[in-house]
Each structure stands twice: as C-alpha cells, then as structure tokens.
Length: 145
Ligand SMILES: [Zn+2]
Ligand SMILES: [Zn+2]
Image (cartoon, rainbow, N blue to C red; front, side):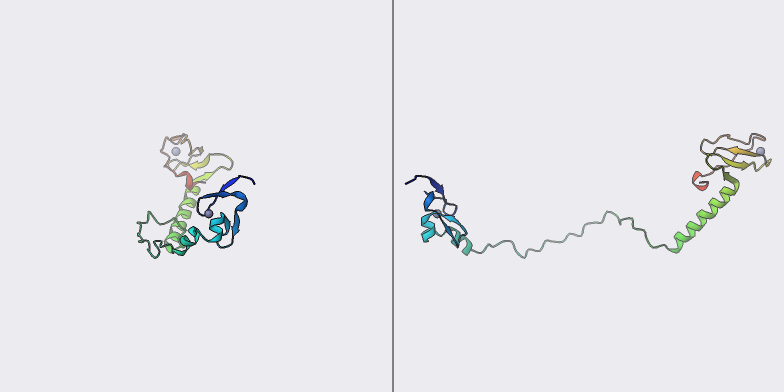
C-alpha cells in the first residue's frame, strides 16, 4: 500500500493516488468518490447553463472621425488645372532661370540690361545684377528643378 495522495480536481478532496480513475464524463482523473458518482461537482456545474450577458449589443458610439485619411482622391479637373498651371509656371521660370546641369546655378539674363550671368538661387548670389545692380526676382527653387 502506498500512501501517496492526490488532490481531486473535481471535488478538491484528497484520495489515494492509485485510486484515481479517468472519468469519461468529467474528462479528467477523479477520486473514487467522484468516479462512483457520489460527487457531482462538475456535472452540476455543467448542468447550469452559463447565463452570460448574451445579447447585450454594445451601444455603438459613433465616434467623431478625426479626419478622413488622405486618400488620393480621383484626379479631378481642378487637380489637372493646378498641375498644368504648375507646369507652365515651371516652364516660364526655367526660360528665365535656365538650370545649369550638375550645379545649383542657373543662367539668368538681367531683365534690365540683358546681361547674362550665372545666378545661384539657392544661396541667392549675387543678390542683384552684377552689371547694373538691378534686382533679381525671387524664384521658387521648386519651379527651377
Ligand atoms: Zn473527487
Ligand atoms: Zn542688369
């Protein structure tokens, strides 16, 4: 006789380990009392239907949307117009400030004296026409390159 005891998971009582048997209804090893049906803990519990908060539909809160995700809205006519306008402006700008490839310089002809010189629109050098000191108009770099 060995005196090893085990705790029954069904009734939480102790019984000799070698007397535990697999109960098919409980689907676990139980003590002899549970096995013979004296304890019905699991069965009773199972008998009671869990009355959960079923059917309680969560109140749908209509959260205020932060902002519509920036989706590429269809290419509408306004976009097309703006795109064309931007392209034309760029062409006009490049006609005046012709980019010198591989540099940050452009070729610029003074509007006043027609003097041709290299102008750095990034550093805005020179600030004025080196010949007549006429102002060089402001130019958007994005319209040049
Ligand atoms: Zn038991
Ligand atoms: Zn000039």
